Image 1 (cartoon, rainbow, N blue to C red):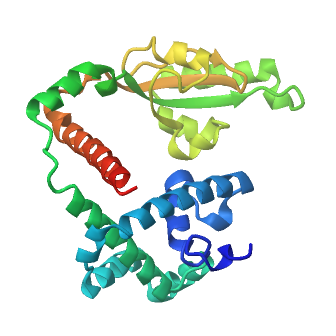
Image 2: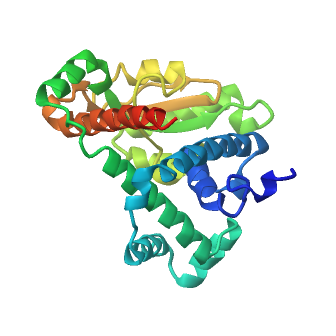
Length: 284
């Protein structure tokens, strides 16, 4: 690695913060917890982004941008505020190959890149209302929310190796639970007492689901129930289930008024990216 070890892109410490940000963005885990393939992808993206930033910072426009020290310190304080105390903050920095001074340098660089891009993009025309409307109506499927159902279940597993979970015993146990539900006993309490799924701790709650999220047998039963209804026993590869359709949220189309600002922001970001690419190309 003669020569490259001294190069800016090859300095591991200088890349530590971008590496941490990218790892969290891609995998929601810091670099020390990633697999080799994940680390490789992080490294690829970090180096590509770093090279792009270098081109931005070497442009004449960058010489006119100065990031004030209080702005950098505010950025550091914003990150530190996410920790219970300063000791935890510094320890986490160290775990990720950082210290406070390296973090300050990385944030100063990041803020300067953002300021240069903002300066270069200042003349971009914002998208019009018509632009927003055209995007919305051309991509209506993106703003469609399918039917959702909140579901709880009680699971009795089937395992011939255990007498209480033999097929016959499991069916008998489920029949008794079903009878208890029919008598008006609390489904939540029955799930807490009898269900053999970890969700028993939350009264059998599986959450709010859309089609395609459950085993096909469970989905077919759940989406045929009316709100508040309880299914009969449904068998899946896990065992026997009793489903309670606690709530139904009908499918709906999000109106333009609810997403117009988000669409405008997205169109603006795309325009800025196109403008930045053209600007960088003109510097070649």
